[in-house]
Image 1 (cartoon, helix red, strand yellow):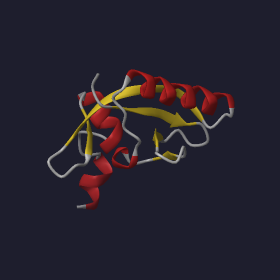
Image 2 (cartoon, rainbow, N blue to C red; image 1 turned 60 degrees about the horizontal axis):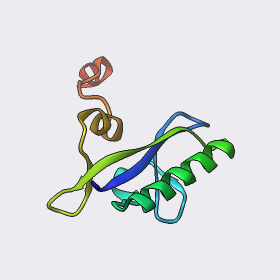
Image 3 (cartoon, rainbow, N blue to C red; image 1 turned 180 degrees about the vertical axis):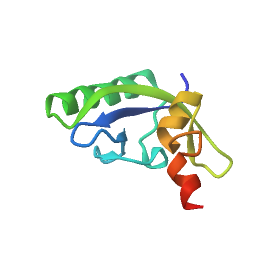
Image 4 (tube, rainbow, N blue to C red; image 1 turned 90 degrees about the vertical axis):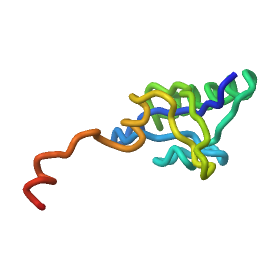
Length: 98
């Protein structure tokens, strides 16, 4: 099985978050807990369901990641890279500020 992390949206502000090794939700995919064994990924998903019940996050699900040359976790799918890194276009307000 591929290396996976658990992602969700934080309920209080909608931010994209990832489950960390200590069980907290963090905003950086690089700080996420990555697992590859099916049983370990199932435990990630169980932690996500518990966080939904506790009203911390919504819609948790595992995503495939790979380790970059520097060891940093990088989402495999483009959609998840956008969620992790932000919009793929310049925003109008960025152009006006330049």
